[in-house]
Length: 470
Image (cartoon, rainbow, N blue to C red; front, side, top):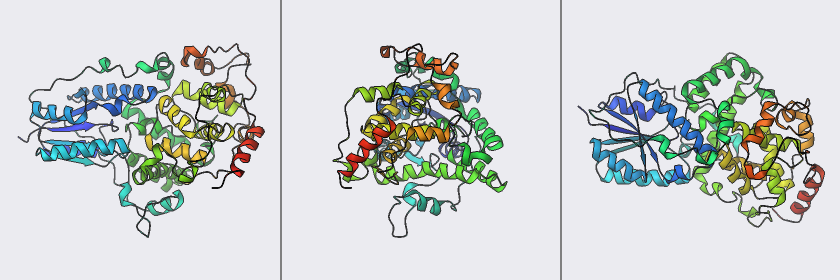
């Protein structure tokens, strides 16, 4: 019999359309699914780490139902894999390729070490539809603007999704595994976990249900619906894509079928999938996007980097600007935020408050269950003006007129802001249960006036921009 293959799970918590798992089963011999809690996992923010724990628990149950197991180990990835190889006699380790700088550094070290040891070490696609290094401009460079990137890849062939393995060959004996609860991945969420949990759609089956519902009921109106935060108009799949509970290939082919059926919003949905690809294209070619200004001429811009009273108000969802505050509160209650609200929230912090995008980047990293390293970095730099394909620095979203345009009925803001309402929604009240106790906030408090008004913030931002040369 062929010796065991270790399948190292990371952000690919699914069984279908999993090229590494598929290849391991086809190789023959036992397949041992493994997850390693290494320093990259330890470095996750509170919400994404908690959501990862839920995803791992669900994956372990799914594998158990198939007669298999998920082996958990804690420590340096290379050391944990080495130990498992020694304990199981495995001669191959397969995993899904990752593209953020820290993962690339870790995986390169692991692959080099394992190959030197005589172990078959192979990484597979699956996290993206297109390898970022395979997409080039006509001059052989990388794309810095989304539209030509989209025009290039839109006609590329996307591999058909793979079916889940029908059998999971087991080893004669299972290696020891850590206990997931002992890892306490949700500890930093504290009481927020209980609030956010009802809004989670957990695991591969629920992700597929979410995709099916969107394609059947919402994608036709997606062009307009995606911009209305008070309406159920988006797929909400970011949570599942972030942990690989669904693959971009599966989303793409569902979108293509909808497009062939004449559903008008399907092409826009496909474009949004490619935005995610573009974010990873950039993170591979310009990894500094995660920690520094993508455009170096922004390095001298006088952003505030301190925890000012204005920044605290922004974090608390108490800026007095309803669109901003509703977005922040939605995040604390659901773990996600509508994309239109994300743009307004980010613009207000970086332009009206002239505070560094790194403050928002780090806060979202701590608070979002759909946190993604590439999308988060590109989104914040796009909003601030310092990034690729960015909104022009002189375009300052007016959060008041944006509210009039995209939430005319005020359904969104009324749903998320309790202060001043006789009968606030349960979600609006849940915000006070989710936030840190140290904020000492209660629904009976008065809603604040603007810390910086829409007009004053715009004038202040433009004055600073005009004083500088870009």
